[in-house]
Length: 398
Image (tube, rainbow, N blue to C red; front, side, top):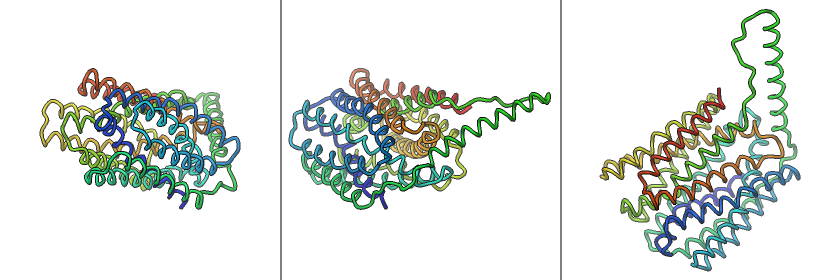
């Protein structure tokens, strides 16, 4: 029940995800580079605060207060966002929004991990992500409908502020701090004991003269972080300018662009649902590798749309977006579960900081490349980026 508030929050940001690029380029006369600067600056500002909020909630062992702070601050800031159409001021306000946007991420991850036993973490994260993805999808559908009826940008931003107000009220009523906080610590102890047991077992085999076929190797957190950073950077490079690609380069009406991305979100929702149902059978390390491999192949479909644009290639692009959404659902559930195992207590914000850092770099790089070198070059680079992320996770998961 405590997740309901997050649904309304995601509804607001689902609407903003497609609305802002179209609003900046269509109504304010901005460019793809302006979009990239706004998104990159916001993400870069959010990185140190991801660490800060994550450290603070683990230190105080209080989580509810940071979720309430996040939703209330975004209610006020989005209202201020609606009061101006000066691009520089909008960029500044959006950067401040990022500071408080990340405040609920680490507490939310901890609440989920402390609400389930370790072998049910995938199921818990999948349930959360599936519900909030419905919120994101609802926001895209809302944008599709309201854009179709000609609602202006100010009205849509005020609506996003109102949705965060509802999220705050709902969180105030339903979010509670856990009475006992021990699950992540237990998992850390179990991992250490398991590693020590394996070492003793291999040493015993060696002393008995038996041939050892296994390596005593602890999973490398640094390689995991590098793969996560690469994935986030590459995904952001692709998705930040993609609404403009469909709207401007392919001439798709703006309200239909919302519809296209609603299908991508539907794919993510299906991915979360399937990941939840298959949670006990899923090998997270294998899932992560396959998700990157699939995402490395799919950008070539977008490239074919640029070269041979037709209804057929557009349909293939939409299908590619749906598949990307599904693979992301499996990827996120697996990486979130693994991060709760690998990242020590007190550093709960590391996961979101890495995602934010990759997202920040990708926002600007993707927009800059699309503006100056064209979308074909961008799609090729994105494909390479996903393959590099695949290599990193393959190395980590050996």
